[in-house]
Image (tube, rainbow, N blue to C red; front, top):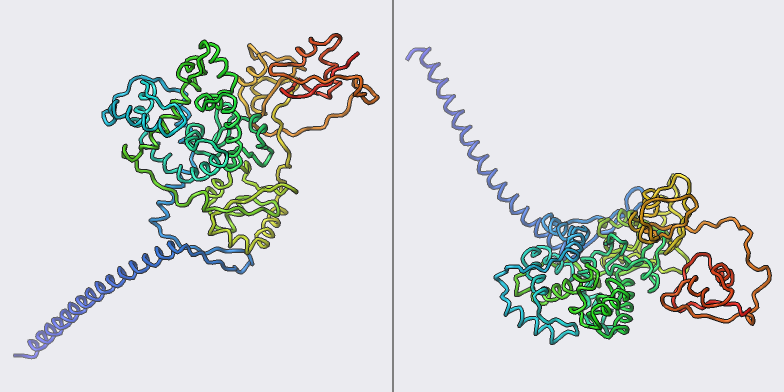
Length: 534
């Protein structure tokens, strides 16, 4: 072989060796990569298991950051966090309330085809239910229509409501039992509010038990610029139990007590009169307001479905904790839910759900008032152990605010508004957070016409501060009233200042106001009025 042939052979041999080495290297890399992938997958599984274990153990670490502010380090399992977010959406949204409120007011009682619940089966189940409850759960076509309509068209909503009930029902049952009220009353809160503590109806009824402003105040539920106790689950439940017990005492029948709770005792007594003296709810239903006519059927249908949920295949998603797995801390200074959320690393939606009575998400500090912060139990210890630092940081933030927080004041249940130049009903309604139709109804107006100086009675939804007006000369006597010269009159149901003035010679409405220091026209049954003997 010549010299040139030897060079070509050597070059080809070198190329073959390099190719072989590269092939072997790629195979080694592939094997190493596969082993590495297997190791990573195993490591990932171990890490996931570790995080899941920590989540189950509910571990939260507390650390101090370089700026000397609180930092809470948490780990969570992504899949579990996703499930939690779905549950929280059920808790915090208002869609359920809108849905159930509409269903109660628009019941039509038309026959509903639902093969999964034969009429004979329904009758047998209602008979069993009737035997263990003080409510009249007798079968009738209207009730059958409502039950089948709910089961056929509201299956998903019902599952969500049953899930929500696990959070609130233990609280309701405890208070109902304390006041010796049937435990089935717990289903009333579903019909009233769909278990939404911040629910508000079109007429201003508020909270889990839908108290109107005046009725809430009668039963000790105060409303101020910061706090609406109608939205406090515990306080509102206690008040609802007292109110229902009073209504039962009046009528001696739980069906009529529930109807009264919805529309007022006056509407129920009028319906009884118009029906010729019947006291069975189903006999007077056609004489009740439309909403109340659908109220008890909706309640009984809800009771039936909850009691027979398993038979109808309802599978609710249960809450991550119950009301009794939370605890309260009395606040020592003003603090916002946003601040608590930031310092404690709790979702603001969760804090709003647990503390629904704070309208502006601000917990005020008022001497002699017991305003509390409700937290999940596992967060209470961390808050208490570091509360001085939390309050210090909260105060520092308040001090930096350009715009001060709203001043605390209590809201009036009723005001007398004087019409000013440029006023019209729409403007006045927006100012007080009410509807034009409500202002017209409260004042017996047939149209929207106003005149300057006209006085309007308004029940504001937005808090209204009492402004002290400059004193004007009045016709009040300059000398003290001598009790010996006056007799006492007790205000009765249906009395007005004008009707009382007509009962006594020489007595006018203005004199009654002066003698009894009354500024408006509001009087209540049981009030004692002074009447001059002369």
